Image (tube, rainbow, N blue to C red; front, side, top):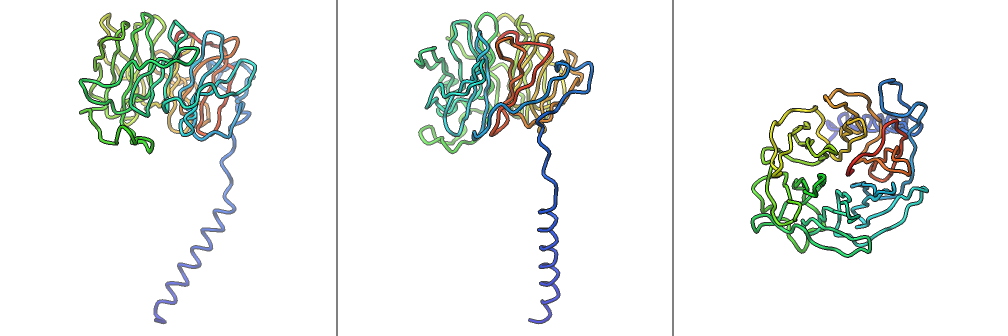
Length: 315
């Protein structure tokens, strides 16, 4: 047994060194107080990144109503929360079908990707639920993740497959043959798959004129733009940037905001990077009383940053 002592001693010594290094390694600095140094950035001059609240489990799906109040998800606790224009956080709905991506329609209904049963819901202001989509061709969707509503009421829905612990009633079997993007007609009668060549779709946003759609393939690390056709189909697929985004939003200048690689990226209409906000965001939207607040959901926290640009169209 003595021949193993030198080896054990070396292993023990290496472990001590590793522990010592881990104890002295500086913690990742907080992004609080970050300010842009780029004069071409849409971040407001002198604005600093501010933590608005914390203590959540995993925040997602922010969207703002017509007054600037922001609704977001704490998905593990199955809650839709509201961040009001006066800076207060409250629970708006619990349970909420394990909602994820959300968007308001023109009738002030909250459209949510209800992940628990892989459905798309419409929730009225008084919290009455209507199931808009429950399957595609008789088979369960993978798990609707994000939604954007074009001006005429047609909806684009991303449907990646992320196995969930709460899938008890629906089961965990993947029924669709791909992870796609779908279009639901404005009359809410017809669901069509409009993108079927992504590895894993996730974030989605469109221009307020309803002419251009941006959809992210998060697995491939790319976001693409498409020309939207009247019937909901998509043409002219073009690579927009090399960020595979979780949530996405757009501002009044047409800049696109993506969330990936532990930060929020801001790109102009051509895909050129304008700025990078160093917060580990999962999703973002514009809101606030004046529409200039960039609201970022970041796992256990929510963050805010004042912008020169403002909210436009469905977020």
